[in-house]
Length: 210
Image 1 (cartoon, rainbow, N blue to C red):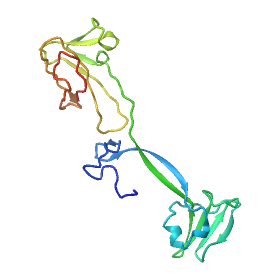
Image 2 (cartoon, one colour; image 1 turned 60 degrees about the vertical axis):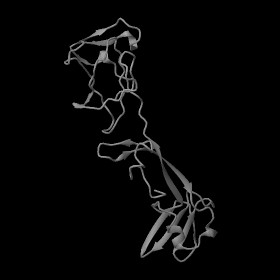
Image 3 (cartoon, helix red, strand yellow; image 1 turned 180 degrees about the horizontal axis):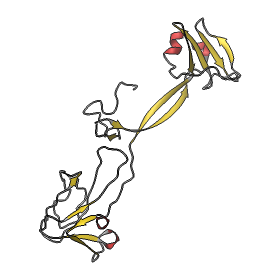
Image 4 (cartoon, rainbow, N blue to C red; image 1 turned 180 degrees about the vertical axis):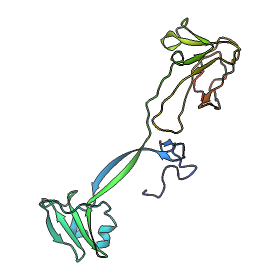
Protein backbone atom coordinates (compact mmCIF):
# COMPACT_ATOMS: atom_id res chain seq x y z
CA UNK A 1 0.00 0.00 0.00
CA UNK A 2 1.44 3.32 -1.08
CA UNK A 3 0.55 5.22 2.08
CA UNK A 4 0.56 2.25 4.46
CA UNK A 5 -3.22 2.44 4.81
CA UNK A 6 -5.57 -0.26 3.57
CA UNK A 7 -9.34 -0.95 3.72
CA UNK A 8 -10.44 -2.07 7.16
CA UNK A 9 -7.27 -1.00 9.01
CA UNK A 10 -9.18 1.39 11.29
CA UNK A 11 -12.65 2.36 12.45
CA UNK A 12 -12.69 5.26 10.01
CA UNK A 13 -11.05 3.57 7.03
CA UNK A 14 -13.64 0.80 6.87
CA UNK A 15 -14.44 -1.65 4.10
CA UNK A 16 -17.61 0.32 3.29
CA UNK A 17 -15.74 3.64 3.02
CA UNK A 18 -13.60 2.07 0.29
CA UNK A 19 -16.61 0.58 -1.48
CA UNK A 20 -15.63 -2.94 -0.41
CA UNK A 21 -17.65 -5.73 1.14
CA UNK A 22 -17.24 -6.82 4.74
CA UNK A 23 -16.82 -10.58 5.18
CA UNK A 24 -18.12 -12.40 8.23
CA UNK A 25 -14.57 -12.65 9.60
CA UNK A 26 -14.18 -8.86 9.36
CA UNK A 27 -11.89 -8.88 6.32
CA UNK A 28 -12.61 -6.69 3.31
CA UNK A 29 -13.46 -8.12 -0.09
CA UNK A 30 -12.71 -5.65 -2.89
CA UNK A 31 -12.77 -5.83 -6.64
CA UNK A 32 -9.45 -4.79 -8.12
CA UNK A 33 -7.87 -3.77 -11.39
CA UNK A 34 -4.20 -4.14 -12.30
CA UNK A 35 -2.31 -1.68 -14.48
CA UNK A 36 1.31 -1.88 -15.60
CA UNK A 37 3.75 0.87 -16.45
CA UNK A 38 7.38 1.00 -17.57
CA UNK A 39 9.81 2.04 -14.83
CA UNK A 40 13.05 2.87 -16.65
CA UNK A 41 13.03 4.39 -20.13
CA UNK A 42 16.71 5.37 -20.19
CA UNK A 43 19.49 3.31 -18.63
CA UNK A 44 21.81 6.33 -18.54
CA UNK A 45 19.95 7.56 -15.44
CA UNK A 46 20.51 4.34 -13.49
CA UNK A 47 23.12 5.05 -10.84
CA UNK A 48 23.52 1.78 -8.96
CA UNK A 49 22.24 -1.70 -8.21
CA UNK A 50 20.27 -0.21 -5.34
CA UNK A 51 18.47 2.08 -7.75
CA UNK A 52 17.25 -0.93 -9.73
CA UNK A 53 16.31 -3.08 -6.72
CA UNK A 54 14.39 -0.26 -5.04
CA UNK A 55 12.12 0.25 -8.06
CA UNK A 56 11.74 -3.16 -9.70
CA UNK A 57 9.86 -5.89 -7.83
CA UNK A 58 8.53 -8.29 -10.47
CA UNK A 59 10.68 -11.26 -11.32
CA UNK A 60 11.37 -12.58 -14.80
CA UNK A 61 12.37 -16.07 -15.90
CA UNK A 62 15.34 -14.59 -17.74
CA UNK A 63 16.17 -12.50 -20.80
CA UNK A 64 13.77 -12.73 -23.71
CA UNK A 65 14.88 -14.32 -26.96
CA UNK A 66 16.61 -11.83 -29.22
CA UNK A 67 17.75 -9.61 -26.36
CA UNK A 68 20.91 -7.55 -26.65
CA UNK A 69 22.81 -7.38 -23.36
CA UNK A 70 25.00 -4.63 -21.97
CA UNK A 71 26.56 -3.98 -18.59
CA UNK A 72 25.46 -0.94 -16.61
CA UNK A 73 27.77 -1.69 -13.68
CA UNK A 74 29.64 -4.63 -12.20
CA UNK A 75 26.40 -5.85 -10.63
CA UNK A 76 23.77 -4.86 -13.21
CA UNK A 77 23.26 -5.99 -16.77
CA UNK A 78 20.35 -4.91 -18.96
CA UNK A 79 18.77 -7.11 -21.66
CA UNK A 80 17.01 -5.05 -24.32
CA UNK A 81 14.69 -6.24 -27.11
CA UNK A 82 14.49 -4.25 -30.33
CA UNK A 83 16.73 -1.47 -29.07
CA UNK A 84 14.01 0.03 -26.84
CA UNK A 85 14.00 0.28 -23.06
CA UNK A 86 10.40 -0.77 -22.40
CA UNK A 87 8.25 -3.41 -20.72
CA UNK A 88 10.15 -6.19 -22.47
CA UNK A 89 13.45 -5.09 -20.93
CA UNK A 90 14.90 -7.35 -18.23
CA UNK A 91 17.48 -6.29 -15.67
CA UNK A 92 19.96 -8.86 -14.43
CA UNK A 93 21.18 -8.07 -10.92
CA UNK A 94 23.91 -9.87 -8.96
CA UNK A 95 23.29 -9.51 -5.24
CA UNK A 96 24.79 -11.49 -2.34
CA UNK A 97 25.72 -14.42 -4.53
CA UNK A 98 22.32 -14.48 -6.24
CA UNK A 99 21.38 -13.66 -9.81
CA UNK A 100 18.06 -11.87 -10.06
CA UNK A 101 16.10 -11.19 -13.23
CA UNK A 102 13.69 -8.27 -12.85
CA UNK A 103 11.04 -6.99 -15.23
CA UNK A 104 11.18 -3.31 -16.12
CA UNK A 105 7.55 -3.01 -15.07
CA UNK A 106 5.64 -1.52 -12.14
CA UNK A 107 2.37 -3.33 -11.43
CA UNK A 108 -0.25 -1.21 -9.64
CA UNK A 109 -3.34 -2.75 -8.06
CA UNK A 110 -6.28 -0.37 -7.63
CA UNK A 111 -9.42 -0.95 -5.58
CA UNK A 112 -12.64 -0.78 -7.58
CA UNK A 113 -14.99 -1.57 -4.69
CA UNK A 114 -17.66 -4.25 -4.59
CA UNK A 115 -20.63 -4.30 -6.88
CA UNK A 116 -23.46 -6.79 -6.87
CA UNK A 117 -26.60 -6.51 -8.95
CA UNK A 118 -29.71 -6.03 -6.77
CA UNK A 119 -31.84 -9.13 -6.37
CA UNK A 120 -35.63 -8.82 -6.12
CA UNK A 121 -37.63 -11.44 -4.26
CA UNK A 122 -41.42 -11.39 -4.55
CA UNK A 123 -43.54 -12.34 -1.55
CA UNK A 124 -45.90 -14.48 -3.63
CA UNK A 125 -42.94 -16.65 -4.68
CA UNK A 126 -41.78 -17.22 -1.10
CA UNK A 127 -42.68 -19.89 1.44
CA UNK A 128 -45.94 -18.54 2.88
CA UNK A 129 -47.48 -19.55 6.19
CA UNK A 130 -51.05 -18.70 7.24
CA UNK A 131 -51.56 -16.06 4.56
CA UNK A 132 -53.02 -15.92 1.09
CA UNK A 133 -51.89 -14.50 -2.24
CA UNK A 134 -54.26 -11.81 -3.50
CA UNK A 135 -54.48 -9.90 -6.76
CA UNK A 136 -56.94 -7.08 -6.13
CA UNK A 137 -54.42 -4.25 -6.43
CA UNK A 138 -52.37 -2.44 -9.05
CA UNK A 139 -49.73 -1.18 -6.61
CA UNK A 140 -47.96 -4.53 -6.20
CA UNK A 141 -45.44 -5.86 -8.70
CA UNK A 142 -47.32 -8.01 -11.19
CA UNK A 143 -50.55 -7.25 -9.33
CA UNK A 144 -49.92 -9.98 -6.75
CA UNK A 145 -49.24 -9.63 -3.04
CA UNK A 146 -49.40 -11.65 0.17
CA UNK A 147 -52.36 -10.71 2.36
CA UNK A 148 -51.24 -11.34 5.93
CA UNK A 149 -53.76 -12.40 8.55
CA UNK A 150 -54.44 -9.49 10.89
CA UNK A 151 -53.41 -10.27 14.45
CA UNK A 152 -52.05 -13.74 13.61
CA UNK A 153 -48.48 -13.97 14.88
CA UNK A 154 -47.96 -17.22 12.98
CA UNK A 155 -48.27 -15.49 9.61
CA UNK A 156 -44.91 -15.41 7.83
CA UNK A 157 -43.21 -15.07 4.48
CA UNK A 158 -39.84 -16.79 4.10
CA UNK A 159 -37.30 -16.35 1.33
CA UNK A 160 -34.25 -18.47 0.64
CA UNK A 161 -31.52 -16.06 -0.49
CA UNK A 162 -28.27 -17.23 -2.05
CA UNK A 163 -25.24 -14.93 -1.91
CA UNK A 164 -21.86 -15.35 -3.62
CA UNK A 165 -19.90 -15.07 -0.37
CA UNK A 166 -20.64 -14.81 3.33
CA UNK A 167 -20.71 -11.26 4.63
CA UNK A 168 -22.87 -8.24 5.41
CA UNK A 169 -25.54 -7.27 2.87
CA UNK A 170 -28.12 -4.50 2.73
CA UNK A 171 -31.77 -5.48 2.40
CA UNK A 172 -34.97 -3.50 2.02
CA UNK A 173 -38.57 -4.60 2.37
CA UNK A 174 -41.63 -3.06 0.76
CA UNK A 175 -45.09 -3.50 2.23
CA UNK A 176 -48.38 -1.68 2.66
CA UNK A 177 -51.21 -1.72 5.19
CA UNK A 178 -54.77 -0.43 5.02
CA UNK A 179 -55.34 -0.69 8.76
CA UNK A 180 -53.80 0.90 11.84
CA UNK A 181 -50.31 -0.15 12.93
CA UNK A 182 -49.47 -3.74 12.15
CA UNK A 183 -46.16 -4.72 13.81
CA UNK A 184 -43.84 -6.89 11.76
CA UNK A 185 -40.66 -8.73 12.66
CA UNK A 186 -37.73 -9.46 10.35
CA UNK A 187 -35.49 -12.48 10.85
CA UNK A 188 -32.25 -13.33 9.03
CA UNK A 189 -30.86 -16.82 9.59
CA UNK A 190 -33.38 -17.24 12.45
CA UNK A 191 -32.08 -14.11 14.21
CA UNK A 192 -34.35 -11.07 14.59
CA UNK A 193 -32.77 -7.95 13.13
CA UNK A 194 -33.33 -4.29 13.93
CA UNK A 195 -35.85 -2.56 11.71
CA UNK A 196 -35.34 1.09 10.83
CA UNK A 197 -38.31 2.49 8.93
CA UNK A 198 -37.78 5.62 6.88
CA UNK A 199 -41.53 6.22 7.09
CA UNK A 200 -43.19 5.57 10.45
CA UNK A 201 -46.72 5.53 9.01
CA UNK A 202 -47.50 1.94 7.93
CA UNK A 203 -50.60 3.03 6.00
CA UNK A 204 -48.30 4.39 3.29
CA UNK A 205 -45.96 2.11 1.39
CA UNK A 206 -42.77 1.76 3.41
CA UNK A 207 -39.31 1.08 2.02
CA UNK A 208 -35.82 0.52 3.38
CA UNK A 209 -36.48 -1.74 6.31
CA UNK A 210 -33.50 -3.77 7.37
